[in-house]
Image 1 (tube, rainbow, N blue to C red):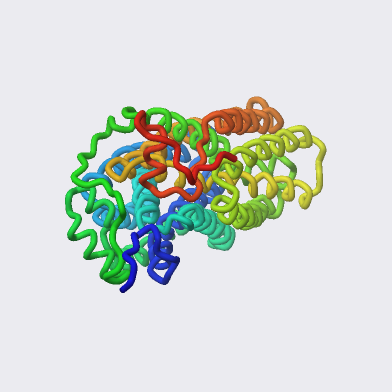
Image 2 (cartoon, one colour):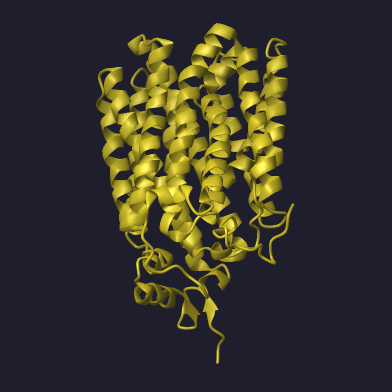
Length: 454
C-alpha cells in the first residue's frame, strides 16, 4: 500500500513544468511590455515633439496602472479564484495592446499604457500565487524565482524586436507597441487548460473539489496537505494584523527599493548609454539588447542558490553589489570608457540586480496564508510601482538637470538603503512548508525545527 503524500511533497514532474510555463508566460509578456516602451519612446519623442515631462508621464502611466492592477487584481484573485482572474487578465492584455497602433497623440498613449499597466499589475499576483500553490516544498524557490527569469526573457526579447523594427521607419513605434498582442493571444489559449488552485479551493471550504484536482493530476495517493486552511474569509486588512504587518512593511520596502532605480534605468537605458557617448549608429539600442540578455546570467545561480543556501543571502548581497557598481559607473561617467567596458559594468550591475529580483515572488507568497496570498503579492506589486512611477518620472529630469554622474549616485543610494533594510528584516524560509512560512511572525507561532538562519 502506497503512503499518502501531500501536494508539497511531490517531486518535480511534467505537470509542474507545464504550470511553470503557463504562469511564466505572463511574466514574459510583462517584461516585453515594459521593455518595448524604452525603444518606442526614443522613436516617438521627436515625432510628437514631446517634453521630458511628457515622456516621463508616458513611461509612468504603466506603473500607475500596475499600482491599481496589483492592489485590485491581487484582492480579486483571492476572492473569485486564480484561474478566472488568469483568463480575464490575458483578455485585457490583448484588448489594450492593439489600440496602441492607432493612437494619434500622447494622451491616448498614456491611457492605453495605463490599462496595460493594470493588466500587468494584476498578472503578478495571479502567476506567483498559482505557481506557489502547486510547487513542491523543496523546489518552490527555484520555480518562483524562475518566473522572474521569463520576465527578463520577455524584456530582452522586446529590445531585440524593437531593434529589428527600427528599420520600419517613422511608424516603427506603432508596430513595437502593438506587437505584445501576439504572445498574449497565444498564452490566453494555453491558459484555458489550467486547473484551479487546490489551496484556494480549500480556503473557500471546497476541500472535496481541491482533492479531486490533485488526485486527477498526481494520483489517488496524493492529498492536499497535512494541515491546510479551510473556509477562510479574505479580508484586505488582514495583511496588517496578526503579525503580518511586519512582513507587509518588509515586502513593500525591499520591493520598492529594487524596482524604483532598476525600472528607471531600464526605461531610459538608450538615453543613459547615449550619455556615456554611444548615441551614434544605434549602438545604444544594441547595447540595451545585449545587456538585457546577459542579465539572465544573474538568475541562473540565484534560482539555484535560493533553495541551497537560503533566501537571505541571495537578497542581501546583490543589493550591496548593485549599489557599488552604480557608484563606479557614476565616477567613470565622464571618463569616456570604451563601449565594451561600459557595457560590462552594466552587465555586472544587471546580473546582481536580477538575482535579487527573484524574491519579489518568493517572499510574498511564503509569508502570507492562502486567504490573502494574492492580496499580499498584489499589494507588494502596487506599492513598489508607486516608487517605480515616481523614479521613472523624475529620472529624465534629474538626468537633464544634474547629469549622468549624480543620477547614478541617486540610484546607488536606493539600492544601498535596500541592503540595510534587508539585512535587518529579511527572514529565512528555506525548506519550510507554506503553512510554516506563513506562521513565522504570528504571535502564537514557534520557530520551525527546519528553520536555519543564514
